Image (cartoon, rainbow, N blue to C red):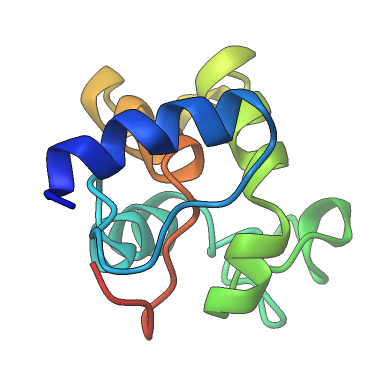
Length: 118
């Protein structure tokens, strides 16, 4: 079955709650692209060892140091960064709309981790 046909099947499966078929690569932002943004805009406050003096421990108890942590909190990242737009706090790191969209797309397209095939 060609990849485009698999995508048609994928759409049906996703709408029915199924999983994607093996062999067809997921598209969307890479983990590296998402990780770069999280590192630039989030880990100063959301880390095991925050670098922002106002946060001696991870803000809200949310640590984003590892891929697993990013994947675990992906939905929350999307809500706070993309939907509510209240993170980064007061947008002190000047996150752009394009960066917000990239993080949202990373979440929507499967929270791809560093070891997952693309």
